[in-house]
Image (cartoon, rainbow, N blue to C red; front, side):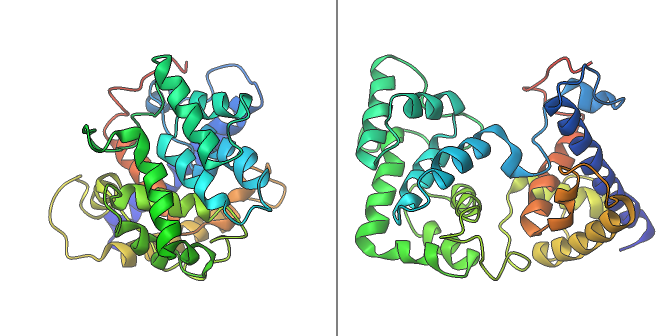
Length: 288
C-alpha cells in the first residue's frame, strides 16, 4: 500500500475499534453519548462483528444452539435469515413455530393473515410475483436443496463450495447466498470449521466501495486490484493493529478482534463506506 492508502487502512481499523467501544458501552447500559464521534452519534451502524447484531444473536441462540442435535437445522437457519426480521422470528419462537419447516411456514402465513410484516427491507429479497410470492422462496429453496442432495455441502469444509452451490438456485443471488453461508459458519455441525475462512470472501457494492475508498479515496472508479487479495492484505494489517492496541486485560468483547477473518473485513468495509458517506440518510437516530 502507498502511504495514503495505509493511512486510510489505519482509519478503517480505528473506526472499527471505536464502533466496538460504542457497542460495549451501550450493552453495559451506560448513558449517552457513547462516543465523541459525531457521525457515529447520529447514524445507525452495524456492529463490527456480524454475529453481535440482534438478528444474528437470535439465530445463534434460538436456532443454532437450541436445535444443535438436529441434522436438518440448516433449513431453519436459511429460512430465518431470509426473513431477518427480529419481531417475526421472536413471534414464531413464542408460538412454538420454530419446531419444523412446516410450523415456520404456518407462522409466516399467520402473520400475513394478520397483515403483519414478515421480512426486513435491510436485505434484498427480490420482487414478488403471483407465481413466486416472496415469502415462499426460502421454503422452496430448502426443499430443492434437500431433494437434490446439494445440502450435503453444508457439512463440508468449504465456504466457497457452499456459496457457489447456493448461487445456482433461482431467486437466490450472491448477496443472500453469502448471508446463508455466514450463518452456517456459526454452527459447528456445518461450516464453523471450514478451511477457507481466510481465503474465501464474497463481496457486494458496499464492500467494493469501501475498498475503493481505501485505495483511491473515492467510492467509485476502476481499479485493477483483486478484491480477495486486497482483503487478505487488509486483514493482515488489521491483525497487526489489534496486536499493537488490544491488550490482554481488555474487555471480552474487545478480545473478539483476536479472531478476525476475511468475513469481518468484508462486513466492516461496508460500514466504512457508510461512515465516509456521513452515515445512512435513511437510518438516523439521536445517539447524543
